[in-house]
Image 1 (tube, rainbow, N blue to C red):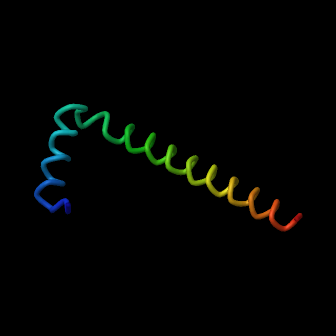
Image 2 (cartoon, helix red, strand yellow; image 1 turned 45 degrees about the vertical axis):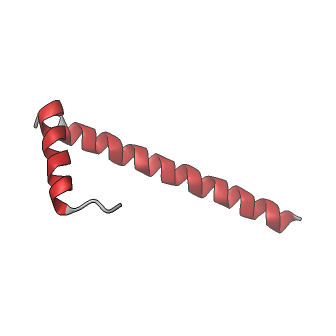
Image 3 (tube, rainbow, N blue to C red; image 1 turned 180 degrees about the vertical axis):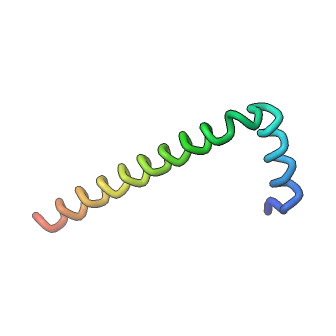
Length: 56
């Protein structure tokens, strides 16, 4: 199941209609922060696990 260029355009247009042009930058910033925090959390967990393995 591949998403093509046409489907992506339709999704973006629907998002634009639902949220409006003024809210999109704010939503983008929020999503970027969420992804950054998620990656940081995953990295911290991996670091803890590798530290535990080295201690044993």
